Length: 526
Image (cartoon, rainbow, N blue to C red; front, side, top):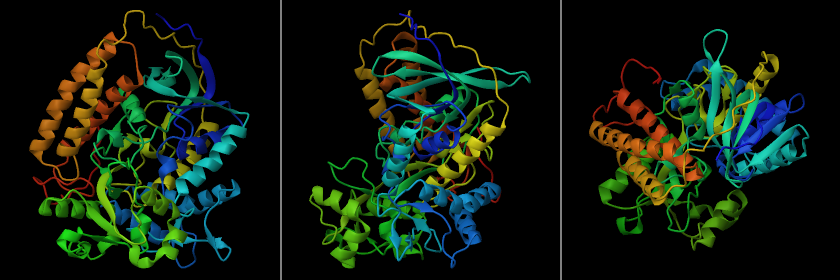
């Protein structure tokens, strides 16, 4: 049948309800009608799960230049210095804005309590105990729910963007189609401007710290709409995800290592601390180095996990600083005040994404990308800890300003979605099998350590799966699983193609066939 729902029109469409999307909505809604589309409930998404905090220079002993240099060092030569300076310079104001929104940051003696994480030369992580993302998200969600200028569409998943030719011969975005999951219909939305804030693509891997929503929807839709995508080979694997059969995607924060936690081998191997053998900074080395060290030790000893030990700090210290992690581990029978935590690396952050300028603009007119969906140049070849929530805040503000000051456009009502020539899928199990196969071979072939042969195998499998899924997409009615698998295959293809085009090892991309870094430093742009 054909959907007869009329087109819904807004001044700005925002896809995604994480920190980037909510911030942009609140920055725009006083002067515009804003729609937030989110494929789950408003509180779902990666921002809510961020534990560590937000990096910002808030102490007289620290300096903006030190934060810039720490970011550039972690980024292994690929950070865009202009973007880095814009973000770092805007960080203190971003924190003050969150304070004005009444985010309950942890304080000490009347001042913000600052912690330190790997790769940082000073204590500069503003946090809310060990659940910063939840504290920020809950505060902003309440503000969004109260705002009359914002309309929320939960359980709406982006299908595709709608573009048209503009006067200069380029493309402009005039809206999108989204599947209303509850009603099982496709709704058309038109908008003067569209912001993609859909997060990353961690679910392309078997093991990830990301929530189920992280399926690269915005990256894939922007790619299909004609946007450039950059640096997709740089997938950050968080070194310490809880290793437990009943603990899905639970992260053990970087902040534990910032407070002295040590990585050790299992008791059967003498509980030996191993990070000093790999890097002089030991547990405070950047994430790519720590993740590769853990991967090395696991393969060397044939073990499924290593351990992170903070028990020597004592129960009082742990309960004060890490109550959420302590409580969750205790639910699973692990008392971190008395025993080490089993951990394993997991896909954590997509450093590349849709290529944008300093206002979040893509190459398609009136289309913006912010947050983990975008490649701003801030993260380079490896994201510095706690710069991600900061990037969301700064680019959401810059994007909102650009929209408020930029030219408006007249957009048409969109054609109703036509599914008169498709039927219900007869074997939906095929989608499930393809999803599982994709995640497993991406983990095995395009993971922490890569080779040319592994990348070739992955590319071959992706091409076969894309053919199957495209046939499904053409013949059958849309489902959330089909949309997400289609998007994950696009993202997987972009990751592999980007990795194949980089003939060196740098930051998060390590290829045994090209173990050294090249003298020439350049972004990978597709």
